[in-house]
Amino acid sequence: MPPKHSTSTPKEDAPTGDRLQKILAQAGIASRRKAEEIILEGRVQVNGTTITTLGTRHDLTRDHIRVDGKLLHGREEQRYYMLNKPRGYVTTLVDPQHRPTVMQLMQPKSGPHGDQVRLYPVGRLDYLSEGLLLMTNDGDLANSLSKAAAGVEKTYLVKVSGQPPASGIDQIRRGIMIDRGRLDEIRSGRRDRIITAPAQVELVRGGDNPWYQLTLIEGRNRQLRKMFEEIGHHVEKIRRIGYGALRLDVPPGEFRELTPGEVQALDRAAKGKKVVPKAKLPEYAQLKAPVKKRSAPARRTFASKASPSRRPNA
Image 1: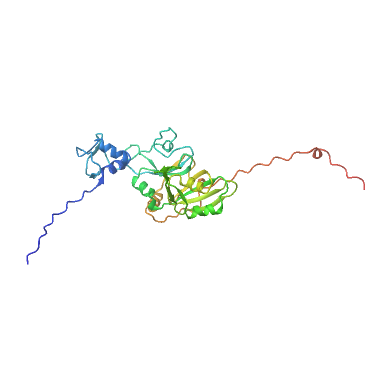
Image 2 (image 1 turned 60 degrees about the vertical axis):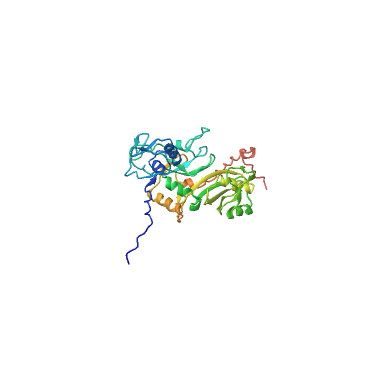
């Protein structure tokens, strides 16, 4: 029998390469969202053709891509930093209220072609919180770390006003119902509530205003503050001391570049793989010993100044 011939039409080859907005972001032009705006504004040309459609795929090694007439030379060098964010800084690139931003703490960094590397924070720490903040231009890793499904552990030191009962701490350990979104936000005429994932909680220092160490696998808006508010206690201070296998080891307001091994550990954590931090906490990940009040010197009484009395005759 003669061989049968298929009457179906061959499928067209699927487009290859990366999305144009991703290429622009990797080249350090702008964030992906801003890159989309640049494309829609007609400021990008690929092989001489202006592209105004989102989602087209291209290859930077073969295609000539220009933004505002400037040719892209290649992917921006990927850089990774640990910053110790002080209180009183916002975790944004620009603040409408003109408050200090974490970008002001980062000195300009040069890329492979002498251009300035565009860094941005991974996740957030609110204005009054401090501690470990990752800064990078690797959008893929940043997105992977931020996904809730990855379950990357983040460790904090938290100072609480008053002494929470053991039952309240157990609630936080098991998972506690909090408001979703911003504090006191009402959606559709009702409070939008959600239960948190179980957390590791350990008392680090007791007293009238104790310190706890908490490890979370999620990062909801003002989550730590909301969790303690639910059991009737206000959070006074928050310091993030751990992110995946990283532990805070730079002074407040300073930063350092991560080692290749640390970047690899972050990548493993982003993929949901187990990572183990160093057993010994660095200095800046520990609580400082409380300052002991100096006792006032004993006052000399009149009797002490006088010469010792003679023992009376027996």
